[in-house]
Amino acid sequence: MQKRTGGPIEWLIPLAFVGVMSWLIWHMPAFMLDWIPYTSDSLRGQVEAIYKKADITPNLGGIFGGHIDVIDMTALILSPILAVIGARNVKAAGIEYEGTSSIDRAALFIGRVTMMMIAVMTIVMLYEVFMRYIVEKPTEWANEMTLWFASFVFLTSGFYAMQQRSHIRIFLLYDAVPRWLQKVFDTISTLLIVMFAFFLVYGSFKQVFVNKLYKWELYGSAFNPPIPATLQPMVLIVITLVAIQAVLNLIADWNKEPVIHTDEPDEEEIEMLRKAVGQD
Image (cartoon, rainbow, N blue to C red; front, side, top):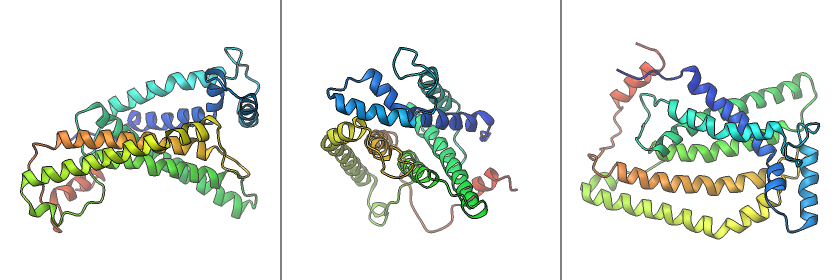
């Protein structure tokens, strides 16, 4: 029996996760100022000035006498709870590869989170169009907010695509060789992914986490979001997850029968799509 998907929990939890993580990212300087020591007073003052200007709840006092308020702490506690609930309740659609490992479940949940980010991004774009062309009062934040969300969508969808084995591949040579040689190709490609991830993280760790995140580098626009401070660390986090997922894919697919790729339409997939959209 085919699993039903699209239940309220499966979509409300990712949406709540997007909201909680958005709050945490926007208020991340509060955690850095309270929990990470700054060796330079001038740098600490710079980050503190940025945070005070961007703080959404400036009237709430810090619960530890610092910068972290009760909403910040609540969001921090909720983020892993929502992630666990979301990963446990997500159900693979008929055309999705479900997998068996915990990181497979996490990738499916991230896929749902990515869909919610696309929805939020679309709403922001429509709001900006309305304000700019109907009300004639364009916002200062919609363009950068859309760019910010789109960048996260690009990164998280890469992790989801790796779990789904849906990255673009050229099968001309792959399909023509025996299974043992296909395994060699799979191993080589996985090693290349892992090596790329390792050297990228190793070579740019200081640049990203010290010069960008630690200093909370801003975008430099009127809205001035911390796009460099948040996106560059996210690149390293996602590429690490992609490398781990590539290794898990190699292990999971090792003993599977070879898949022959043709230009003929996949009738089974077409039937699954029809069921997914409710057509007979």
